[in-house]
Amino acid sequence: MKTQNEIIKQGYDALINSLGVADTIRFIQYFSPGKGDYTKERYQWLDEKILADVLVEMKESPEDDTNQYDEIIE
Image (cartoon, rainbow, N blue to C red):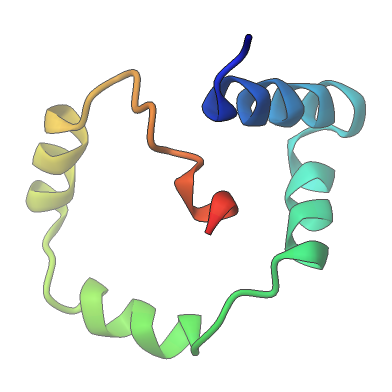
């Protein structure tokens, strides 16, 4: 039996293979409008970061993040 994360990953892979990355994102955004004001919030966290910090965070993040799809389940 597959886990919820495995099913979600398989679904994303199917969408990407069928639609491509850009259209997959457009498809998901259609069903996941989100909340808040991304542009406003983006500037709030971007203003506090420098490029060197972003690079360090990228290097420290696990390559196989099994929680990367959790936002869909909520």
